Image 1: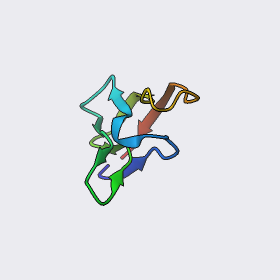
Image 2: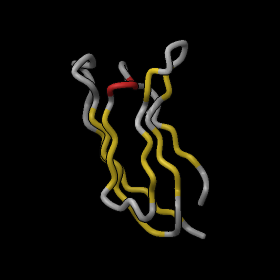
Image 3: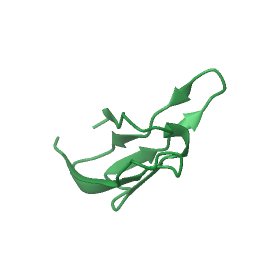
Image 4: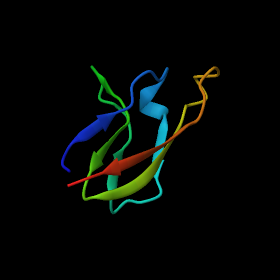
Length: 75
């Protein structure tokens, strides 16, 4: 809990969408363009449990694939 998982490798991280099916377990943080730098999508563990994360690449990433992964947080 309190740890962050970063999802690297997206062509356009600022416009890549991220979501979770269990926001009580994971807080998802989208990538963003901060002017001089760009952050990548990530998720922060909030409490023990299991959640799925889905990442959808932006239209600028035509070769990108949708990523769905299950994450389990333990105490």
